[in-house]
Length: 353
Image (cartoon, rainbow, N blue to C red):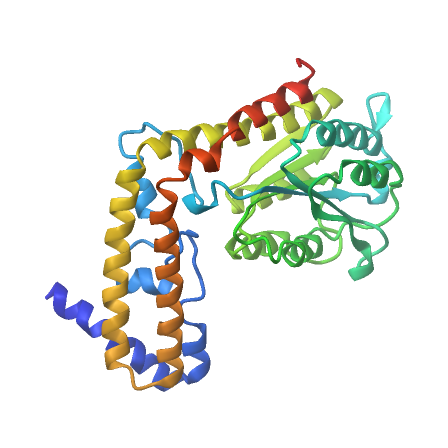
C-alpha cells in the first residue's frame, strides 16, 4: 500500500499541473523551508519532513551537539551581518546620561572594531525620512575590511524620520541577494513600533523563508510594553532572539550575546564534524530516495514544464550531494581558526582582551 501510494505521487503532481497550468509546474521545487537542499515538494513526495533537516537531526542523536539549522555545506562560507538601525525622531530620547542614538552609535562602533577581519558587515538605516522607499538606505553594502566606512557612516547619523520596519525588512531581502550560500545574520535595532502601516511579522517570515535565510536578532531600545511585544514577535516569528535594552550595559550584553551565539554555533559544528560519516550516510539515503522519485516522475510526465522542473531539481540535488561528499576530506580546513577567531572577537568586545 505504501509503495503504491508513493508510486501515485508523480501522477498526482502531473494531474495538478494539467489542471492549473504551466505556472504551477514552474513553481514546483522552489521552496525549501528547512534549507537542507531538498525542496519542499520533493520532501513531501519522498515522505520527509519539510521543516526538519533529517540528516543533521539523525547525526545529532543523543544530544552530543547543539542544533544546527543550516546546511553543513555553509560551514566554511563567510559570515555576514547586516545591521539595520532605526534613526527615527524618537531615537533622540534620553537613555541614561545620553540619548538612544548616542548609545546605539557608541556600542555599534565598539562592535565593529571587534568584528573578525573575515566577517562581512553592512549598515542599513530606516527613518531617513517619512514613510516610503526613500526612508530606507543601504549606507554600507556587505563587504569585508569596511570597518572605517561603517564607523564614518555611523558617526554622521542623526534621528529624524518615521519607523517603516516592514519595508526595511523587505529591502534587506534585496540587499542579501547573491549571498544565499553564505551564513547570514541580521541585527535589527529599534526604539519604536511599525509606524507606516506595514506588517513586519509577515515581512520577517518572508525573509526567513528566502534562500538568504538570516539568523535574526532584534534589539529594543528603551521600548514600552506594546513596542516590546511587536519587536519580540518579529524575533520569535523568525526563530530569532529578542534583546530588551534599557541601559548602555544592556546594549553591550546584547551584542556580546551575538558573539557568544556564533561561538556556540562553531562549537556545535566541530561536534558535528566528528559525526560527519553519520550525517553523510543519512544524507546519501535521502539523496538516493529523492533521485529515484525524480526519475520515476520524469518517466511518467507528459508536461514539458514539469519535466524541466524535475530536471532542474535533479541537477540541484546532485550538485549538493557531490559537494557534501567532497567536503568530507576538507572539513577541518573549512572550520580552521573560526572558533578561535570568534572567541577573540568576543573578548575584544567585552574588554577582556
